[in-house]
Image (cartoon, rainbow, N blue to C red):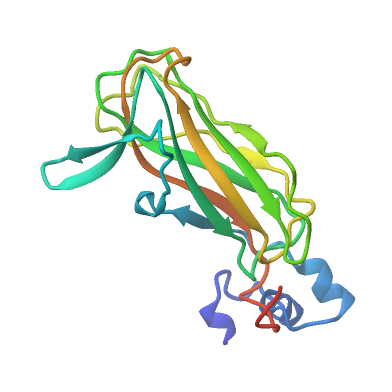
Length: 207
């Protein structure tokens, strides 16, 4: 890789390139790891698992599309799992958020009650006995409307024990029977923002 193929042309040192590649062992290179930025780890809605009861509705959208619509009067949940990639900066926090759009005109100030529960486990490590909850509630503002792509604020997922290949088993819920908004919403996606400090690992089976 040449310097002119990287962002920040002329501002990248050899030891920083080594750190990004995960190939350097010098103290300087190790200190530089983690400064390279963030990437998305998205979960496509079609990859979700559904509970036996309390699942969102499969709705027709824009004539030819199908989406998951979460009720404004009932609790709806879906399930998914994610695995942190080998480029993840081990021990760093990650961030989660939800993308959605209202199915009907929203009222400013009313809240859509999203939350995520998760279990995080490392390879060869113990699986926790209980889930950890994350609150992703979103209060509508005056500019929100039908067909507006809304993204909730990020919520921190504490990653001090996370490594490459940590798996998070997750449940996403919209608490439609207790939040203050009574309208259905369409889930566009859910994803995590993760810090990366290298392109991959030198070991094919671990970070």
